[in-house]
Structures are given as structure tokens and as C-alpha cells.
Length: 426
Image (cartoon, rainbow, N blue to C red):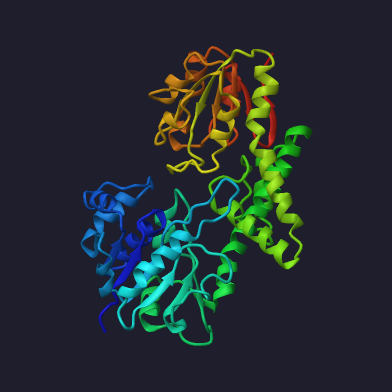
């Protein structure tokens, strides 16, 4: 039996990563997007996203990957994934219109036995309501993590598959494709799979809320969260992979979207969502950490301070600024003297700031340095060099990119999440 041909509709982050992983498994893969200019750039090797390892993955398996702006190209596929990214507004509400439009575009050209898989994240009940024959329609939980997407796509932990009737075997073409990854396959009802994705993110949010809440306590009582977290991970009930690094609230769009979805369901179905609202409130509170420290410990002393901000993306190894804590901070700093740097995101996203060519140039002459995104490049900064070029002595490094003790040894006052500030020896 020949291998099935796999198709992906929508060459945003999710579709592009997933199509590349399918090609890497040795499947002929058709990658469709209606944007002819985008397809032209993809065929020319120009990618619309920043993702470590993706250019190399596509280059290695390019022979099995076809980019096309003609939806008819999906007609040869045995399995077609709808893989458009789902945009969210400022409140975290999903816009499902692009998914509906893509299903309507793709469905008419599917072969007689071809399967349609919804890979884009949707709320419970969405897949079953689609006007597609149930024996040809599936939902698959996506596992995209910005900055680690290649690893997640090529070496998945498991596949969660939503079916009309999970007691029936998964259709042969989809089964053959999924089994090629040699990981567990978990079939369940559409609604269970749709809610499973949200459930995964809820467990992550709960861990983040624990870390953020207790890290703030550490800052007040003289404890160090970096000592406590490893002890928790040795508890089998928590585990070594637990999300226990404190951060600046929930960034990106996916986690907040899932919280909003369950709040809406809870309010409509009269279920208790108080803890979800508490997580949202905790996220909003911790997102202000950088501004509060900057205001209380630097700007009250010198309102005219020059501030250097390193990092604009919401996390390292991505171009996305969705819900970026850095941009939230910069919103407080309009009208002040601010210099910024990011390896990927242009300074024009905050046009009231001055862009710098490199991190040290941004820090030069600054009274305060804020490392707002933990890019790997920033870990190479030497505290001695920062102390030499900075005018002031204050460093805010929430993610512990730098060695705090080394900063204090160079005469810098060092603020980070989860522990009291480190100050130079008297």
C-alpha cells in the first residue's frame, strides 16, 4: 500500500510547521495558501515566521513538500488538515471565521474518500457542527509551542484525535500517517478532544499561577524561588517537567484564549469558573511587575532616567508580540527616554522609542536596563561590560538571564522575579 498524500490548508505558523513535519516523515505533502505572494515567498525560501530549526527542516525535506496557491492541488490528498492560526482580540476571544472560510474553500475539492482534519484550535462543539460527513471528519489537538515548534511537530508526545464515534477505528489513511510518528494515539469524542487541548493549557496556567504567586511572596520575605522550584520537581505528584518558572503573566494568545473560552462556557452553562478568573487577575497583576519595580525604585529617584529595554517579542525565539509584557511596559513609558533592541522584532512596533543596533548599544548611557525577553543572545552579555557602558546602576532581569551575583559584584543593583534584590556590597 502506498503512503497517503497529506495536505495542509493555511500556511501560517501552525500549518507551515505541521506540513514540514509531515514531509520529514517521508509523506508527499501539499501545502496550500490562497495568498499567492506568500506562496511565492515560501517557494523562494523566505519564511513568514521566526522558528529555530524550521528553515533547515524545510530545506532538508523540500523534495516532498509542495507549496501551492491553487486549492485544487489539495485534490490529490488523502488527508487534508485545516491548519490556519486562530486570531484573538485584545480580550482573548477567538475569531473562528478563518476556519469556517477555509473549510468552505477546501471541502468541495476533496476526493471521494479524503479525510478532513481540523487542526486549528476550536471550542468544544465546533467540529461536530460542521457540515462534513462524520466518517470523514476528525479533530486533532495541535501542540505548537513557539520557539520549540520543530521539536514538538517532529517528535510529538502523543496524538489526541476527536472522532464522531471513538469506538470505531480511525480511518486508514489518517491512522497510517499518525502511526509513522511512533507515539500514543488517543481517540475520543470531538468534544473531549477539543476540551483536552484547553485542559492541557489549564494545567500549565495553574502551574504558572503557583510560581508567580509564590515568587512574589519570596520577593517580600527573603526566600528564593529558584531554590524551591527544584525541590517541587522532585515530588512525583508534580514532576520534573512542571512549569514552575515565574514570569510576567500570561503572554502570547493561546492560554488567555482558553481561559476566556471556559469563562464564557461557565457563564452560559452555570459552572464555577472562579479559579479561572483568579488566574486572569493574577496574570494581569504579575504583568505589571517590571513597571512597578521600575517606577518604585528608579523613576521616583530620577523621573528623567534613560531606560534601555532588551526584547520586544512576548518570548524568546519568536517574532510574535501578542500580549507581550515588554510592550505593556513600554506603554507606561511613552514620553520618556527609551532605547530598545530585539533580534527579530523591529523597534517600529513602539515608535516612540529609539532602536539600537545591538544590546550593548541599547544599554550605553542608560540609567536602567530592563531585559524584557530572555533571548539567548542576551545571556552572552557580561555584567562588567554593562557596568562600563551604563550611566546608572539598576538592572531589571525578571527571567534571570544574567548572573545576579556577578551584577552586584560589578556595582549593579539587580532585580529579578522570585527573590529580593541583590545590591552591591557596601
